[in-house]
Image 1 (tube, protein in one colour):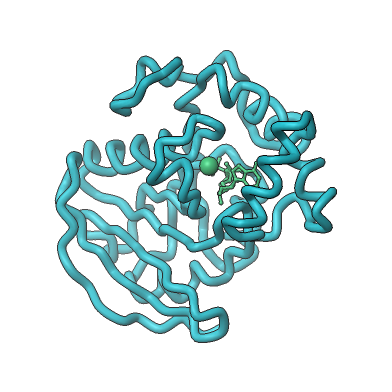
Image 2: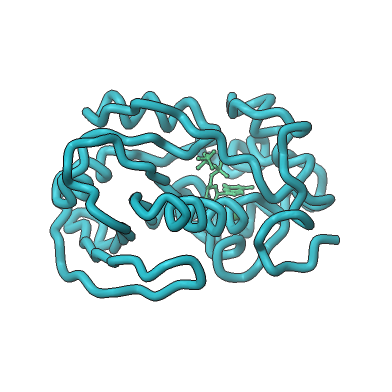
Length: 212
Ligand SMILES: Nc1nc2c(ncn2[C@@H]2O[C@H](COP(=O)(O)OP(=O)(O)OP(=O)(O)O)[C@@H](O)[C@H]2O)c(=O)[nH]1
Ligand SMILES: [Zn+2]
């Protein structure tokens, strides 16, 4: 894996004007993005989100999952703090790609849960890797994160890759009638550290979405 920095620019958003940094993975041909706000290379732990691409949730307002809500909430929290980083990794569908995710959604429409659907298609439940974060964070001068996630495997994978996780910050937002079962399966089968009772309902988040 060779991650190369390509270019940086400003990225105005409703929450803050971030600095956007583009990287290319020579091995896979995929491009990945980091958004930063404030001074992140001073050695102090940085509030951070390592977000895996979900075209349907992040861009198309899907309510099947919590990805879009988490993305907006993470950007808002970083903006409130005035300092932070978001890595946007192009690992769509927990690494199986968009079209296979649609195949998996089809199986879920027929009754499978998110893990069973991946397995029925011949994939592991989660095929993502996080070692690509290392050169991206190194380029930005970040070695320590306060990581916004509910996923213990993400925390362990980043620690094993050499990133110090000084704190795990829960990111429980976006519960709605369409993703309740999906979130329950993540907690039951994928080990996510969250209880549905902790969730902020989608209707009460800052996401401008229809919540029913
Ligand atoms: N294969 C598959 N991928 C999904 C499904 N729903 C969401 N995804 C993908 O899952 C990824 C997000 O993973 P999540 O399990 O929601 O969250 P996480 O990143 O593990 O954990 P958090 O940091 O707590 O959000 C994105 O790449 C989505 O495209 C699904 O039903 N099947
Ligand atoms: Zn999603």
